[in-house]
Length: 83
Image (cartoon, rainbow, N blue to C red; front, side):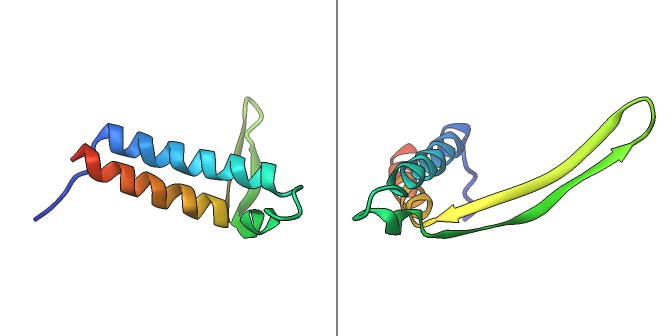
């Protein structure tokens, strides 16, 4: 059985990831919660293509932290109610 994600489910997942990243940035300075900010960044560094008339810049970086993963897990649990 194939299950397609609805727009609302994708929105809830995105909000969970963003809130998790926000919590990670706020917890980075706190001594007891700094473990939430532990993570890794990866991706493609920016590359610029200058064509004379216009300039294109490409790049993609993703930062995964413990708080982001927890935010996604909570969002997945919430998405189960939007079947």
